[in-house]
Length: 170
Image 1 (cartoon, rainbow, N blue to C red):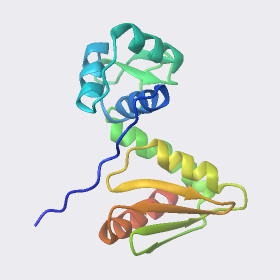
Image 2 (cartoon, helix red, strand yellow; image 1 turned 60 degrees about the vertical axis):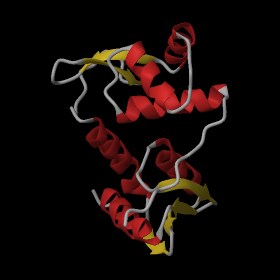
Image 3 (tube, rainbow, N blue to C red; image 1 turned 180 degrees about the horizontal axis):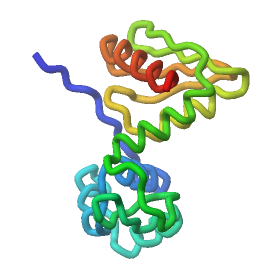
């Protein structure tokens, strides 16, 4: 019996569109605006080419040559050759760099993962987690030194807890 995970619904706002574009650029190798437009349309976001072009410009997305020679959109990498071919590996490496110095402990409790950080770092850690599309993670809530990661179910919380601890230990 397979369980259907809840999907996030996006309002028809500029902020939601920019978030969807950022997520698409993080999770897919996007080689054209038409490809990006189709991905957004699959998520229920219809966008004109002109709007998409302005959004990519505002996000400082540029076309970058990846190691395999593919030219794809990236955010914040300039014209340098990407170090990691796989988008998922790049995302994980970026998260590991941030979490390594900021996570002091991780524990699963029912469908939640509780992440402890030094004082003042929780909101930053939550932001890093929220920016990456992580299967089964619905969102985060942060205080001063604690992040609560809300997962779709108890099993996901246990696996994400182990995964976050592994990233923080790299």
